[in-house]
Length: 261
Image (cartoon, rainbow, N blue to C red; front, side, top):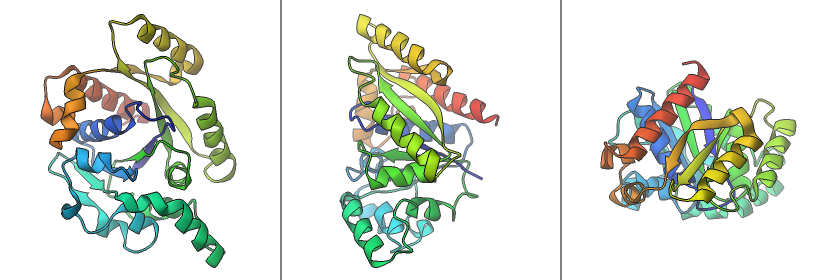
């Protein structure tokens, strides 16, 4: 049965999609059958794995809206043990469409559509990674309800913890009403520039705040990591010897170790 992990932070530019792509790819290399769900209408996780609009007929929004099954929409990638449920701009309308559906049908549970869809393929994968958009709207709520745990990427820069309280309150709300088993898998420090003092200060601040929830692995700020998505590849394929490749391999191992697998 797959473990479902959402990458969540309503703040943009924290390395969330980069981590979603590269953690999923690294888990695949570790021999884990992995599904990456692109839950962002910007569809950067989709294009970051080399898929263009013409490569798929269905998207995650259609799955959540009941237009097609999740099995119809999933695409295998050319990377080891890695499949993707792609996204399109259609997902941007999920808040309006789902509220309308709920008004038309009292039995429609607007926050549970992704969870219901995922149940159909949970036994097919070891891990399901969800890349959430930088907002706490209906799509992200669907991800939190569907997930076993969340990873919170936090960039090693000034204002790193800005907005974290709001995110934690959202997690608590989901735990109290819709998904009591949801937990924080870990906090991931990203985009570290080791040449700056502020980066080291943020590491200390985050570890003081989240204690043992912080992953040992820290993702460095590297040009090669930024370049990889434009080539439609995870970093382990684009530059196998990169420090980022090693970092994401270590992160995958930490995730697996925390699960006791």
